[in-house]
Image (cartoon, rainbow, N blue to C red):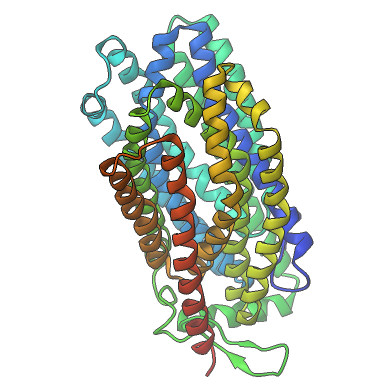
Length: 488
């Protein structure tokens, strides 16, 4: 194991989960900060049209990132299994195939995006006065998609080995460079909005190179260590034979029994690496894209409530990130910790992972909820000084924030379901809860004429609760089947 990696397959988990989660939270906040940097700098130094042009293409970028974001989770889960099995050969294969997948996927999205950018912007009814600016920005920005795919997939591999600190450091470097290049290129060129886009391309390219180099050195270091440790070599050969057979034959530490996952129940055991990545990751990509599109329907209902409501919800969506990112980080801890233990054949530790992550998550999220409720007036005041907007904002957080812990439960359960290879089931639950159910509730409140800020806000905790119940049932079913079929 390399410096910075965390093994979740033995010992207590509390400190390991905390050590893994906090760099991940910081990385998400950094990403949010430099995603906003282009918008802020363009608005101040180029003008409001440039700022609007950048914002107009955000949906296209979100959909593109959602596609390879899901696949990077698939790569991460597969790599975590190899880490748990201490399987050097499998890690090397995943690295090689991930290189090919990231580059090919990134180039395809870039080319298709370049060709269809004008059509997409027309479909989104982009105003004529910013149409050409938006085309210029998006076509240059899409060049960075390949670099983003590389960074996301290789950072997923790093986190799968328990190292969330290195991606955070490289993301910080990239974010700082992005802001510096924005200011530099705007001042030394006449390219305007193009300069902002090129700053993103350069900074993303550097972060992708750093992340790829780190993973490559990491794998080489493991190969070097293994040459001088016959026990590790024997273990690796044995694990490789088990992996190709279906999943794992590992000695149970407690009673000496032999556990394995049957070919029937391990949906990725005999798949090729790319096949396994798509089985685990593509449902997540589809979920992200479908939910993103459905959010347009939610936004339309918010828009119908007027300018004050729009401003209040806009501020709320920024404030809730301080709860959402910790929950997202805990969810990833569930996914990677479970995947490592599955790779090591320690299926009996799956319950321990789930309980520890939920307990740790509650210790983090409940104080944040309390602080948000207590200082809500101040927080909304940062975004808007209008008393009407602040009042509506407070109604929103009083309706949603007390129930945000439910989101933690569903995030942990959903990632547990994905970790045991049932990613399609997890996506089905999410799409039903966050797309179908949410849309039906919005239609209902519109039909019965109770469309208010509170009624729209109430839809969120209702659908969180429904998803949490469905995910809890799904997790218990998947876990029981998985454990039952892990025995000879």
